[in-house]
Image (cartoon, rainbow, N blue to C red; front, side, top):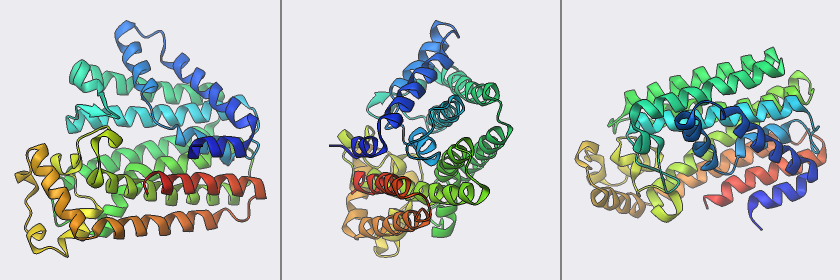
Length: 323
């Protein structure tokens, strides 16, 4: 049984019904915008991952969660923003593959991909506005602003092998963890939880999101492409400095002198990955991520027992998927 199946089984039939409703509503939100734009947006959603963020929205509202239209809207909005950021990231990075499939920018060009990402963003906020929750709109708006800040930080740091661990972690928070935080906060808001619970669940989401990004960066180095859906060492190829390289550079003098602009082919990226792996840096990066997962789990102990248990399963699933 997959980690997601375990969570859905523990969460009960209400979670499965809500996630099905989220899927239907997402497709409805991007329909009716012309055969090209609507199809590109729809294909982007179909190619989506495990729907972890909308799942966190649902579970943060309670276990079992209330079968509420506002909760569905919040989960839909979070996933639409996530999808939009992926499309725009691929435009900026010039990426040709994501999850083993051609990216929107590869199939439709920069203009088509930019318009697709814009549509996904606009439909996310339309969904929340229609649901009538000002608090939810503010929460997702703040996260979207921070996502943009994180993307600018990553652009500024491109090719800079001197990036510190502290700056890297802040980039992880902005690029990834703020949307995890928003997902948990939105679920708690829609579930009617008090302010303390909203803040606690937001902190849980943020810790989990940073761990998720650390482990994703480990996977980029360890590969293989059949698992990641992109070339091994894709971060090296686009000049993104991540924790494995930061750690490895302190251990291998040759990596300390590595110029990322000299890594131009998949073969050169693979060779650099092998040198990073040989330093043991991946084990250290994983260990740091697992500490964050444990800390995240500890934050939820005051929740009702079943909700705490299911959120623990989600956190364990993040760690195990990238083991």
